[in-house]
Amino acid sequence: GENVEQHPSTLSVQEGDSAVIKCTYSDSASNYFPWYKQELGKRPQLIIDIRSNVGEKKDQRIAVTLNKTAKHFSLHITETQPEDSAVYFCAASTDGQNFVFGPGTRLSVLP
Amino acid sequence: GAGVSQSPRYKVAKRGQDVALRCDPISGHVSLFWYQQALGQGPEFLTYFQNEAQLDKSGLPSDRFFAERPEGSVSTLKIQRTQQEDSAVYLCASSYDQGAPGRKAFFGQGTRLTVV
Image (cartoon, rainbow over all chains, first blue to last red; front, side, top):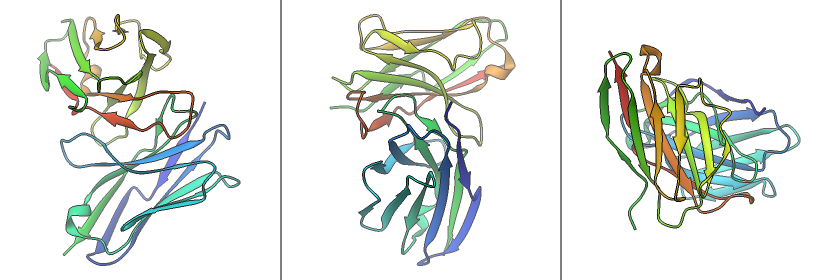
């Protein structure tokens, strides 16, 4: 089955700096890769996603890149703000079925 | 309309007690997923429905766990004879369809189960 790894497990950045979180997956059949942000005690919220036929997608300060050959994808947050502090999860899915999540990255943006 | 709704938000159960957790998906969403999230970890897949059909239950940890979605809308996750290791947040998610990439899944706020 699918296995998703995520690095780093914790990340601290200064406000205004960029943050990058990387994930790898094992199943070449995976074709949809969402990213979720989870604040303490709250539900995971979808922040950006990418399909396997696209190499990069951007939404304001957030971007995701995908390398299908290497089976890895990354989340990039630019101009970080304190409210970006949360746990971020990547996930991989085949055709919107079973989503397999990474273990999460705790991002702290220091003012 | 409203997002995915789960109830109760919190449940404390004595070891050995049966519990039932409810999920109301977004109206019209065909796919429904249950996940278990232990403290400090990512969501772990439990089971998946397309309409009323349970297409994948490979993540259910034991036969004490049972899920149903009889009318293809509301779903219930039942845990029999709860054990302390069942303590976790149980998350429900729904998406409009499956069988195509890019079907966004939206989560409920979860039910925090504590077994004492």
